Amino acid sequence: MAMFSLTRGLARCLRPAFHIERAASYWSQVEQGPPDAIFGLLEAFNKDPNPSKVSLVAGAYRDNEGKPYVLPVVRKVEKSLFEKNLNKEYALITGVPEFVKASVEFALTKDNEFVKNNCFAASQAISGTGALRLGAMFLHKFYPHEKAIYLSAPSWANHSPIFQHQGFDVRSYSYYNGETCLADFDAMCSDLRKLPAHSIILLHACAHNPTGCDLNADQWKELSQLFKEKKLFPFFDMAYQGFATGDVDRDAVGVRTFADDGHQILLCQSYSKNMGLYGERVGCLTILTENEKEAQAVESQLKIIVRPLYSNPPISGARIAKEILTTPEYYSEWMGQLKLMADRGIVMRKALVEALKKEGSTRDWSHIEKQIGMFAYTGIGQEKVEQLKEKYSIYMTKDARMSVVGLSTTNIAYVAKALYEVTQ
Image 1: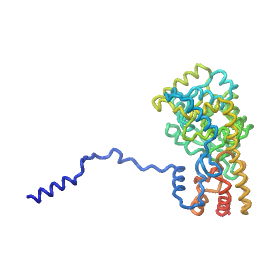
Image 2: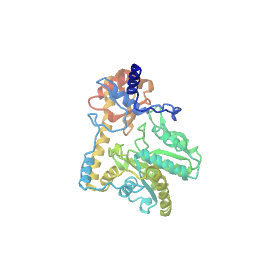
Image 3: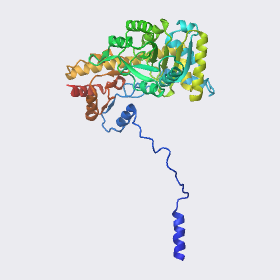
Image 4: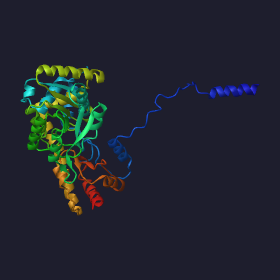
């Protein structure tokens, strides 16, 4: 009996402090989702032990040492804002008003007729992605025609899920010529002419992602007239103003051409690339309207969408962007630093082509120099991309998109040699 009591006491001591009778899980039917293509590659890169490994994946600027770059003007503004001892109160539902106004003027200029006559509704957004989603939500609720949107083929990988999740039928139009590795404007126009009136067309304002193939000023003018003729709706994504060429006016020529021609465009802006405010998530959505009364109605509906979604956007990044956009000293410094980033990409493109020639490659790589912005669409194909990863630990997306700012003076010869080896 004593032994039994001892055993029972020991069992009590070893028993868990509590026991829960679990019902069947609510989430057993949830399937494992596929990893994000970009972040999956970055994870693989980080685990790769090869000391010569090179990441040409992420859409974020890197300096010649391969390190993230915080613009000096951003640091200066951050210090200034800290010294002002500002409060941390909520922003308005549509964000920091001074930032929103400055952002619209940065894109369209103060002299634009829509801007001068207050014929626009605008809201701060959670960077470019948030602006796209907010725009999609507004259009799905209020656009009086078919809920379908046409994307360039190819387009940024996130465009399709943004609109699919909002209930749009996602379709495509021709844009890229795989043989020349450049934009095919004639094919683009041919496809657009066949679309029903009032079709929604998503346009990359500059630094087309993923191809780096942009339209020129004359092509934008022709496209604007085609949109008028066919009564198409222009939805602009401008994530790289200034980052593409180093010239903020040149990079905005498409948006401004359409606005000056009277199109009631929908515009999404991001300050991740051109100000390096990646993690601050600073963006803006602008919708041009017929008159001021219409603008007020549209803004009221944007507020109704935003309020139950995230109430109001964060203030820190918007304050930084507002100071840079509205303070002449800061703006001037920013223009210089922005051009530095854009120029580094251009220099790396040229250096890569020269290094490939030096290796002995007879392949035509001229498209790499003709393309613009953060990315080069190399045209080498998925099989070669896999070989670069497996043999040389050089990482790029499977569609052969290369982040040119991942190149540097220390790795460009290695990358060129590897590219030559897999493509000869």
